[in-house]
Length: 384
Ligand SMILES: Cc1ncc(COP(=O)(O)O)c(C=O)c1O
Image 1 (tube, rainbow, N blue to C red):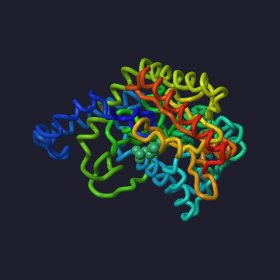
Image 2: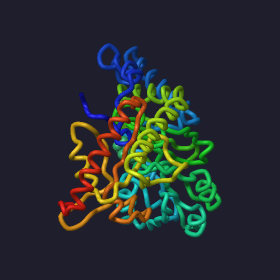
Image 3: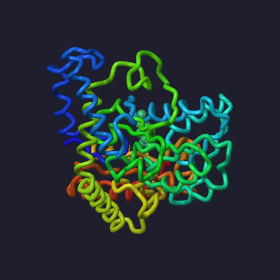
Image 4: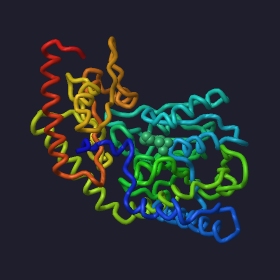
């Protein structure tokens, strides 16, 4: 039996529907979408169809989408592609962004950009009034993630976008964790750019997209022939783009049901753990949170030791790393003000569309056993 998978925020398996859509492109159907002949036209039609499917999910127009290699590339394109021709040199982000944003920002400081980091509250949320205080005529862009990968908190993007626009700034959101879990509509969010990653919603890894609102002037990262309307040179990854399109259509069709199912599984986990271990410390907003995400802190236990002990039985992620002389809790937990002694025992459990009740009950049992055992060892003076 493979371990129970509770790491859907890291990646998801390819949906059967996506795999089936991709199958012909592993053999029978091939061609360069730029070729004008039969083979090329078939592939061009497939890429066009995928773009329509993704546009349908996001509520945008097909030609506002640029296919990329994933979330990281989409974020790089959004942050590094803007700014040419503008005197504005300030970028505002939140304190809980993914490295695919923070590392790009670090890089941009070398080119004269000032990066302003907005704090978050104990639930991991940005306060729009903090943005109002920091934003000004020098602000080029505000980039705040839609949902956090570690704790699942959902940011007030529409409000932030309104403030950004009042000051003539561009609003970008990294929606890699939100797509396929909550409804995402670019019009309702009011964003100018939005990044997504296929492998977080049952498409293969290595494909993603950036939504760029019509009329926004963005420079490409990659130069070459004129693929993706000149925005991303290189022959299209037809196979995976087809998978992305199918996964987007699947998400659009089953989202309410999927979200309810993932939530039921997540809540079952939390209820089970809470019943056996008492007052759970759950990180993230109690209600404004992804339906599949549970960041649970087990005080007195070290997360990696806990997960290593369950290797082969349960797959999940740790929110902290313990070294010989110190504990490193994640930047997200730190920004939320989670104390070290609580943060060090943080495990991220993220359910998916395949999670089932039996697995959740088994996972609870495994975690309760392991936490009880490790807690007793720690109290008895065992190693951290
Ligand atoms: C919030 C967020 N942004 C960006 C990424 C990067 O996406 P990709 O792995 O497709 O480059 C991830 C993946 O972990 C993520 O969680």
